[in-house]
Length: 376
Image (cartoon, rainbow, N blue to C red; front, side, top):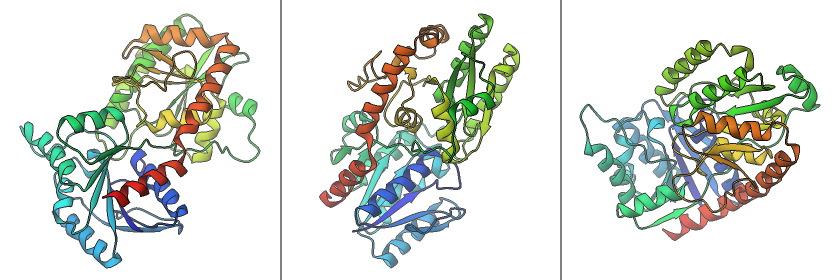
């Protein structure tokens, strides 16, 4: 099967959707598919599958570029990796199924609506609905998004979760004790990790407020912010990161925080393995579309995160995860304090995390994705 993966993000441009596309391409290739990634002009491949960096701007002309390339490559299906910020919050990508000339599957990484123009109002939702309804098939990475699209009348739909884009593979000669010391963790101290961009939806401000309380209490806690502060697709990341910096200065807790900046996957893995717990206080609740969550689980990190908007039976509070209410710094403080001097509890959460992560393997994701392509 010849598969085209259309994505607004792709390495070296940072972003979870780009990383997901790369991992999906690798997994599909391992299953015998001929994969072609169609993406922006700054993208770079590594020879393991074809990358076509042809799009300068995701305007109407980009749709014609994609159609021309799909015909030239004799693709059987196009799979759009949809997150509106990755396409500049613009309208054209929503109409690719109308002009592509072959079956288009859309993978919704979220249901965020495009900007379009001032006072667009209901047209924004109509654009997303049009994309979903005109697609030959729809994949959602989060069950709640699937339920919402079904309420909007989308029928040929399946739920396939994402996998981690960060394997537990630290650099050679990795020594956890040495790594923790380099991060300034005191003897007997607890290292908290936060992984991902400082996006408003991820609740970094709640985490900083909780850290300020822990600092007041002289708790032996340190925080490492893993990865870059802002993504290239969402312009609001930069403003929110600046807000976080002001908050850190106001509380005077910079001495409690280490920042890695953009680092390699191996270095991300090393930092996650160094943590005693990873704190991910998503403002909109935890879901399995969050790559930062899956990376932490794959590394066996005890995870403190926020209660999901829709029930997720796989998550068992106190067994494989620690759940707290969204936007509650006091609840985060209690959760962190409960793990401070509780190695047995941390060990139980770690084992539970690894067992949960095993459900999200790329081999299974590729198999289900190819089966869905063939069903359209």
